Image (cartoon, rainbow, N blue to C red):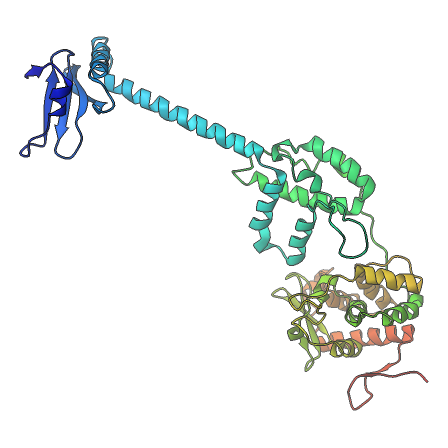
Length: 446
């Protein structure tokens, strides 16, 4: 093997002939140092030696990156490893592995810092986007409302909006929200707005359960759900069973006050809510396609497991007075109780109901209280409990109801119309469904 003294000139002119795949030029100064040239690649310094009787060849690098003295020093270093009984290839692999490990460690540290910098607000937004296909519109709206920071001008009335219960957590790092932080939050919120805070706690608990299932969040949230501690539950207290409902004696004043509302759509909605016993959001989402005047039925979007429900719907009777109220409404959108914005139904008329109760001299009554009133007033007529439950969309309360009672719409109508007529009678609302050749009209008292 001929050897030469490596110089810049000799290296620059060294090329692989066309008739060969590769050629080598060996250095006479450093043992084992060579320069390899190929047809397809750039020349490179290499080291070749004998380790345990076998030839070992290692690429050092390009002459553009290594000077001749540097390459010679590297060749001597590799030869010393062989003389010490060490495989120079493993040394190189270990060096490469160390560089890769250091790089991976730096990346892991960066990812860890990014995870720890993640705020509650960012994770909550991800949570809402990921779960939206599985939530109803109302559930999604509740989650969005829970983090509103407040300070905005009210759409109705004067002043600014108040921050929602979970708004305090929005700018906080998710890793900093532990049981102690939630307990401090609960102690404050429980004193100011217990009902709203209890809903926020339930949503917060579900959020942390979701976080534990996400690789991006599992390592930065507590092992135990911070929203489910005993102290938090005690600070927020237990929800008291709601008892708001219209009494029989309050019906005349209530119907009279509703009839004076300027918003005729809201007035019709409130009366229909009382006379159907539907959930507020079910009736609000009622579309004109859901009103069947031929078979006199209303198709309400309901839970699949509810009595009478099928594919997320249940059919209830379209009673005469409810039909009369609906037929008087303008068909300006797809919704029966449509708002001025054609793309959505009316907003919940909570404030209007409060105004009605104030005029009628009735203590606070909620929209759900009107639904509760339907079931309570049915007791005066001793209507079958299963009939009332099926109309309202309650789960069957007994085996017989669940498996041995099939009530068709006509049977439900018989009881439902009887209840509606009785409520109107108690309210002093004169109405004759048979007057006018079958057309519904109000009958004014003499």
